[in-house]
Amino acid sequence: MRPVSRRHRILSAAGTGVAALALLTGCATPGTGTAGDAPAGAATPPAPPAGEVIAQGTVMDVGGDVELCLAGVAESYPPQCSGLPMTGWSWEGVDGAETAGEVTWGAYAVQGLYDGESFTVREHPIVLALYDPMAPADPTGGEPGTSDEATLATIQDESIAVFGEDFLSSWTRDGWLWVQVVWDDGSWQRVVDELYGDGVVVIVSALQAVEG
Image (tube, rainbow, N blue to C red; front, top):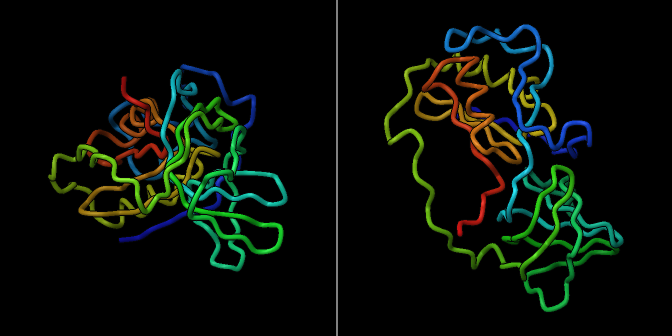
């Protein structure tokens, strides 16, 4: 397995609210792309979710500036990370937090609204250690992928260029490349299927739509 991650920076306002996916120049013909055919710049991200979403991550409060970190957290003390700005967050009645100096943090499942730039909390958070969601369906159906490790490694190296600021992390497993992004409604999956063909890359959305 070959994991890759980076700290997430916020999507620019110019990249939000756009429903259509438009690959930049240099993309492959749909279904015929190979590693190395990725566009020179990032594709347009999907439109923000219309309803509430749930996220699992680290809430980091540095002197009153609160962020929701969906990717890795630096193993310092206090820890450091960069994520989505949060509004509506309060530590009142919230367990599981630690504080060092002006930094307070903890790992939580949070529910709210995402507008493409920031996350607005709408429900009381749940300490992540106590959160027990239903396991998502396996998009691979339990079948191994058919791509070799070298091909997947090349595509993995292209991931940041393809997804831009929406990229969180990626890893290879069982002949597949898995890529975690901030939010996907199926649009990112269509992008990679057009670039590399079906059955190569699996997109994982860090934000999950609330059912019902």
